[in-house]
Length: 399
Image (cartoon, rainbow, N blue to C red; front, side, top):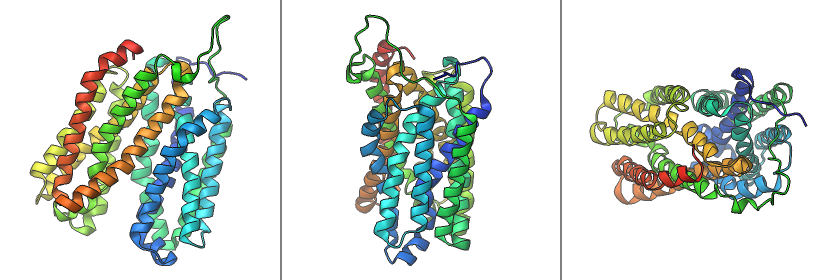
């Protein structure tokens, strides 16, 4: 197998192909959120049951990513990415043809199985076609696919589903997945992901790798910050209409502004992440907390304040995932990178499901106004955890 050696020239086109693959992956994951009434009406179930399809997808990722990553450790990375995209396409076709809610749930589980494995490949893949000093920039490019999914993918899928039917939306998404699958085949080089051993070296099990504690530290950091974020974000629309007094017909504009602000944060991560690898994630995390405090304190009843402070919050969050993804890959040894990427995916998806659960419980017991403050408390707990553990992480594997 040939290996793509890092070069001085930044491989922007290859990274954009990965970006497109990420775009269709995230769009597929969240497509049901915009089509809840359409799917519920045709399949004769409640909207809350349709909403569980996203939760089902997320927890499938949590449960399956680590074992599937271990089982496929020796598979070529390029063709494993192609295989996961093929499964996405099949899952979307099955969703489009679903005769019942249970069949649709099965299609979502299939997509979730591919999703976690896909993320365990894409992050390390980008790291293998750029030099170490370009890693944050490269991950900012590939993570732009997730941001684009929220700005364009899910809204366009929703509009298509409303106009021509939710089944067609899933069918079109399957077609777009196949398009990027072909681009991966044509444009991406094979990469060597198995680190060769030195003569006489004893290969230890991955669980005994010296950088495992650093990987655990970063995974817990991701979980805490994302748990605080999602405990509020998942309920941002009802909060915005009930507390922020945003008219329902303006919500789509609000979400568009929010998504665009996240894209700005992603750009900032690409500019400053490699220059300030330790400080940049803390600044982004602090921005998340500040945005939440501003929204909770000055957002209620003020349309302008909600737009401005939500944008600040989104800029900070937009920078956060690529910065933490880069920190995870910097913290892991070369032979542990695929496993580290898998645990990154697990941490993010566990925070999505956990945030929905925590926010829902607080909403039922204390009302919707408490949610941003709950997010602040959890994010600050993440800050304390970083301050207590970062020296230990750096001592294990500088990065």
